[in-house]
Image (cartoon, rainbow, N blue to C red; front, side):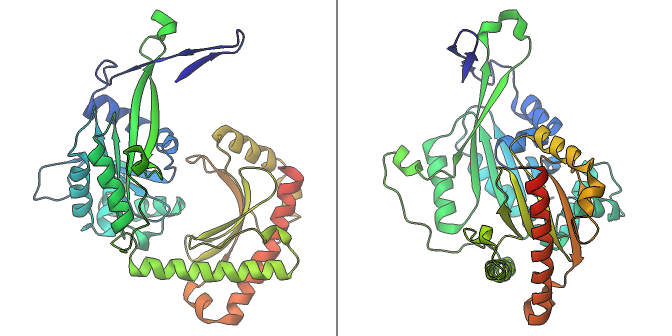
Length: 380
């Protein structure tokens, strides 16, 4: 990591120090830092949708071992084991996989109960915790359909990285390895106090990992493994079919901005409006609803919130441009913000009833075009 002194147009290298020298302890300081600032940590490693549901979690009553941190992915409902190590430990991956295997036995109610405990909510009546998760767009029926692991360590043995990559390629077992390095600014002297910088780098998955260790790249995995359940794959296929029909309808209506978009199996389908980090998106929302939205999701949280606040000062004027009641969602717990409009949507009927599906597509096209005009006038 380099320190840039712009006034003098020069750079100085900062010192990397061990966690031990920085007085960062595995189960105390490091874990506590993450738990006190989970959004900052997860966003930095590219996991902005993770919600902590517990620390020092016993995944099964028959074992005494505890997972450092367990999180819930709000996007797909998967449970995530976050295993922390100082230095390097060749058994870290095996330990995380043990925890993930035991967590696979948890019911959605078990997960919600741990979330309630983590948030100091009622653990007997889970309605408050369930509603809190719904507000964060967690599909309760999707909770714990799959599991994955995130390893965080100062460094890794080569065999750990190779094994993690092999599991992902051959068996669709999702493992992420993050290298964490402590950095001090020695140029500050005593002014530095107890400030330590943390450099976080995702090194698995990485396309060039086999080249790094002198091997040749392997072909993608041949086995489907346990990464995606049959029910989840069915939903993804249905999403892709619907987004394909939406894109085709947009193009028939002359909206060339849909031309370069490729439908995926995700529950959302975004379109650029001409400025990075701002999209008009169609999505399936919590509670059996269809949503059209303009979403502000640049890399900077403060920029997103400022854009949203500025836009909301013109709410009456903007409402007059959009058919249907707008929902102003600042989403203070997230980096992004959005303005959206909703309608009820029966997913089964959407798949089977062509007339109902066309009504939904027509509804989306009208609102997306209106929101796109809003975004281009006020955000671009």
